[in-house]
Image 1 (spheres, each protein chain N blue to C red):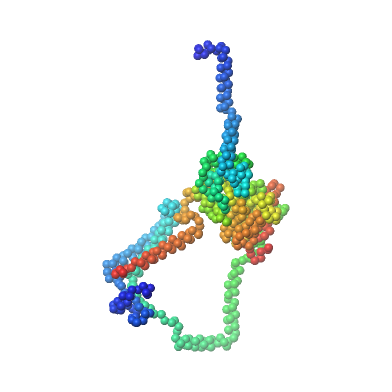
Image 2 (cartoon, rainbow over the protein chains, first blue to last red):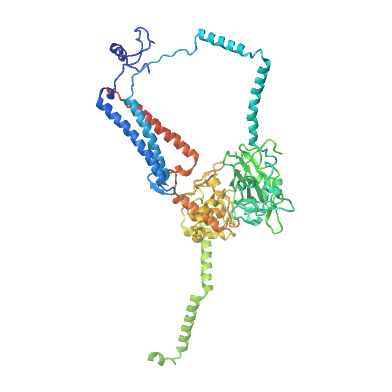
Length: 364
Length: 269
Ligand code: FES
């Protein structure tokens, strides 16, 4: 900045006597050059220009007022469902567009008016302000220390031990109220993280797997190799109608119970335990990622990989849902499935491992 | 008439009558007999299969084998059905230009009748999903779009994005955008599960639900209004954020520079 400044400005500034800085010493190359001379604006010297600027500023403020009135008017009068075509935005909600435009104009005009006002009409005379240390002088400081000592002695804080100790005690206990309020985060989950809706099932009273699309139970032959089906628990003792979307706790339950059903040619399954949990190559995996619990169902039928969209954990569903990439720490839990007397796929029990993200007390 | 009756005792009269009768019966038979049609059809069918086999030998057999039995470079086509051929060739994915993580779509170079012939040949190798007819993939129900939207979000949106704009999978694979995809091809993709896409057979997703999904995807791509204005490709917070930061902040910076560059001084320097 300083070497950009043209040399001829400096002597001029001193000659005109308009600079506010200190005069430069001619033979000091690092001397403070001071401020350049103050130039007046059109509006400072021409009363008509000033009047015009004033009108422009108030016009901007008036437009802002009108826009606010327009905002209220469109809020009241435009139907929320109305769709209009506006180039180049395409089909757009008329209400959204009107509210956004009017509010935008109202705010913009206030800002533009303020900037225009400051630039044309408010004083623009440059003022140097010198900086000083903010420390108080020695005398004041000594005085304050003296007052503090006197105060301490007069309160008897050091002498009246009982008052001092009880004060410390009460101060120490007050934060406990805050700690107590943390209890509202509870109650403790107890076994809730370990069990799902499938835990209702027993070998004698198994739960049917119900297709999320059709709300019907499924047979093994319905599940083709290479297909993908989502399932939820059917009727159980606790839920005689099975898990239904109309259930009050549907979201909470499906977040743990959701299943991904796939079928792999039995000799393509690399993990014998996993094959044994399935039925003739039909495998039922939890749909909940073991990283932080996103629903995971980006299934590639040729590679048998399932990808989590949140942090790209990848599970090999032909190998017991082993984690082959990404931050997940555990394979996807697999649900054991068999068929009942009428040939429907059923679960004879819950997941062996807790579904979803890890937690401290997670059983291995 | 008189002439005709005068000759009714001519020695050849019986022969002429017999010929007329045979012609009439033959004509009637040809008109009404269903067997005749079936005969013609199946011979047309076997012609198509022969023609398909010829086209297949030229375009497909280097990877899939002369009889569609597959090789190290291409899977077996036994049992993939005519729907798979119609999808793969109709969208230009097959014949593939080169192997890779995923075969992209390109311009289709075959006529529909060539595709049908190849589909007939591949279908003759083993039973599989059949190319759908127009009324199979067109829904007439009024609530199809909203139902389809629900099914789409359950079954498809994880890969194809909530608006069908597509998305990335692992190692260079991706779920393509569904905009401007022929309804028939959407339907066939669900039937057959092309490449790494899982299939959604009628046993787990009935025909009617597939119709509803097709209706939703078409609506989403063509007419769905966008209440928020510019959709920026419906790709979600990444594009929206990028647009906000680069375009929105850029405009603000440009305005600030413009304001600062215009002096209000009486003496312009
Ligand atoms: S939640 Fe699946 S990878 Fe993070």
